[in-house]
Amino acid sequence: MTEKDVFQFYNDYVKILYSEIEARNNTLPVELLFEIHSAFDHLKRIYIDKDDLETCSQKAYSHLKRGLLDAFKLKLKYFNDDCNKLLCKKADLRIIDSGSYLIDLLRDKKVIFDKAKSARLNESQKDIDKAFEYWCETSGLINTFEDKYFDSEKIKWAEKQSFFHFGANFLLGIITGIIGSIIVSFIF
Image (cartoon, rainbow, N blue to C red; front, side, top):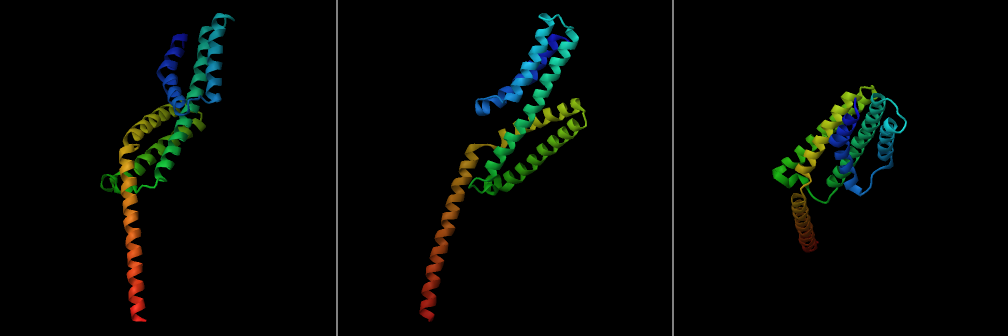
């Protein structure tokens, strides 16, 4: 492993996912910053302390990979939070796309959680490379899911339709109650 490999990994993976995490709350969790700091501290040792290039590069890469695994977990947490907010909205999601929206959403959400579960299991079995592979797939699935299901126009439409449907049913209930009361008063 070389210093260039570390920077390539940082550019191709770490920077992209860290930017996603940062964009959500305009902050970067301190745990992720610690891993980046540790990685660059190892790279500094090549030039300042005259340590071995291969060893320092490998250690820097390991810190970046650990930080990236943490970032994947944060992305999954944010995804889960967003899904829960969507499912708790006052919108009947069953009316979107003739009912297929909610069915597809729940199916695709399960696929994401199954991939994440595989990633965590591989991580716990110390197969970091396989875990990393699963986390990358999970991250891609989350991106696709968000593009497909977090369409604010469809959600707004469903909220509006749900409001009118609830309002009509409420009004129908009041009218039925009044008519029922009138009939009962005539009978008795």
